[in-house]
Length: 377
Image (tube, rainbow, N blue to C red; front, side, top):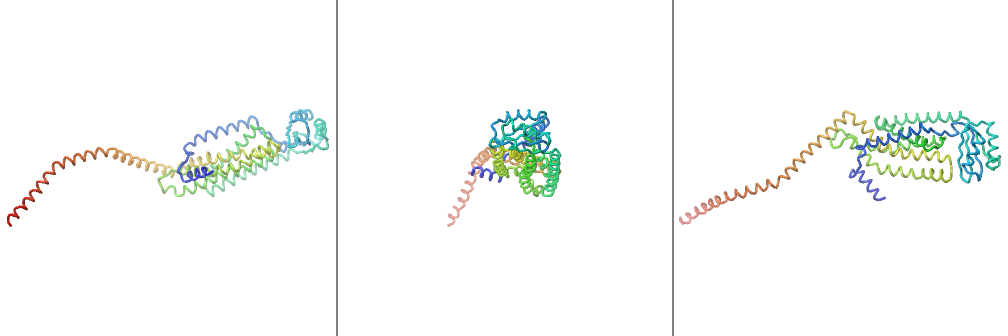
């Protein structure tokens, strides 16, 4: 942990860093590939809508010795022509969903299932769901999603700027598309729990994005008044400065969700936990990825199209070219220095050989003139 903390401090100070912005085309390509895979999975396999959306009956049985495969066979015999799903719950109980059953059809199916599964008919809990109720849930979910998107764009446009709001919106759509595509590929049911999970991940997805944007906003203040860094470089420093924090918060959030998904859903067999936890798990991971590899690089691309940022990039490049030229000239002078010094020393030695005797003769003359003064005495 101390090494991770030291790394985070060095990233924050800019001593080390990874060029996320420079390699943004790679991340764009990876995201496009994942998104296309999710869309293809959604188009080919489709979403397995739960009984709450399609309408039908849900039968919950007490503990039984009949396996899930055998129960599936019995259900298909009891309700031919209806789509059915059998899930094993904790303690050996079963949850059987049969779409398209109405009140009159559910009673004989309940009795036949109780007989086939060798449980008392009165202990089989039956719940009927009408398709109109599912339509209401779907409409409210779409309405809530639309309102949320509008509010997010307005808030980010006011708190930061419009380009950041657009980038955050693209990242949100990216996360939702991947999550829905994973649902289609895995084959999990879409239930009200799924809708809750999808709406929840929107906030988590924005969290890391807003953290990076806040750091970028602070670092890019009065950016046009300097000529040391371009906007892309400052954006890259912002990502590196918040990288460890984003990783820590994501891992801490993923651990309990993973417990819900693999322990609660896998071991205990709780269906609703599966629906919520899968959406949360995929959405959290996708949100952390998009905030680093999608949202901030996209902001840098949008900002670099501005005339001011283009002029800044030209000034930075000109300043660095000038500094490189001066450094090259200094290096060239340093490399040629020893030869020049040797020539100067040789010339100095030669000059000393010529000038030295003349100086000495002059001195001798001066001393000789002092002699006659002695003769005056």
